Length: 116
Image 1 (cartoon, one colour):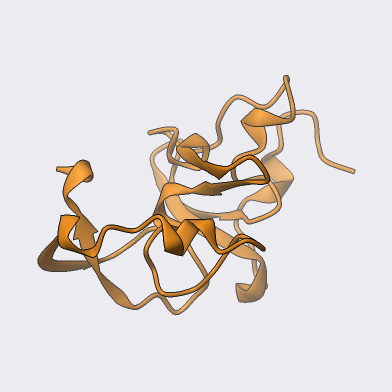
Image 2 (cartoon, rainbow, N blue to C red):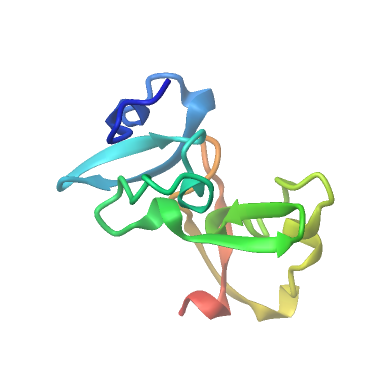
């Protein structure tokens, strides 16, 4: 049910379906959570975001792959909670930022040192 280039999965008007915010062709837009990390399962999916943010995913366990902005956000995105259990809280900075991924509204969260 997706358009060939997945462009129908952008500019979500339903905030419950927004997966992340990024620039698409230079303009700030939203991407549906239904295509986040889909480069793993769909060979024709490249990226919608100019910076490929929608494809920056982490496999936290054999049964779960999540977007990196959903790691260590105090909400389990994986049924086995591996996205939160794998956090090493000492490897987070004391500085915070509002991440581009996750449900709206997004809280300000500590930044993983691995992102620096």
